[in-house]
Length: 245
Ligand code: 16G
Image (cartoon, rainbow, N blue to C red):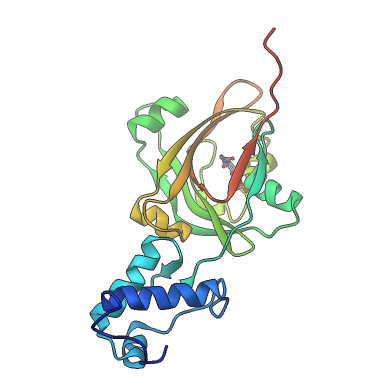
């Protein structure tokens, strides 16, 4: 970013000029997906613009989804995602879904532990008033890209030690003979709030899919109540339909 070309007159507000310059660099490929931008202070001294102007220009590109900001690590050019096709008729885990595609799986923990259940959890899991609930809250990533936030709740009896789940919840359940065999899933559209958008590295307000899954054991007992937020730009959900009888 050279100081040349920014002018108080004739080309619109300075923050817009900077915004255009960054957008052009992305469009022409001079700045590629995942590339980092210099820190605000450095951009201000490179361009001769004030830090307030630089911040405003950058913020607008973050808001439009072209840049992403990660707390503590800086500002980056957003990565384009190739959409994943996900079958809706199979009861699989995130780990299995990604393994089938030959993709890596990582999880970033937001929190996990035992808590007093919320009324919603009491209802969904059929808990008693003294029961505690195991909560697993994590960002699911594949090949370095955050795809979903999952907030799973299970009865303490099912998962007494939530900290024992390192990567796959379903493999922990399977090892204990508690693998779900049936689930009911509800999907609805949502706009991601600022905090969740930050976890998924998209602009606040970006489109997301809210997915609620309640899973059952062969006995009919509920085993899992999970509320997930999937990136709207990363998934195509597919299901086969048959004509009504
Ligand atoms: C899937 C499930 C989620 C389950 C998780 C277990 C949806 C919407 N959600 O992502 O309910 O808890 O798999 O994955 O499909 P894991 O075994 O890799 O932890």
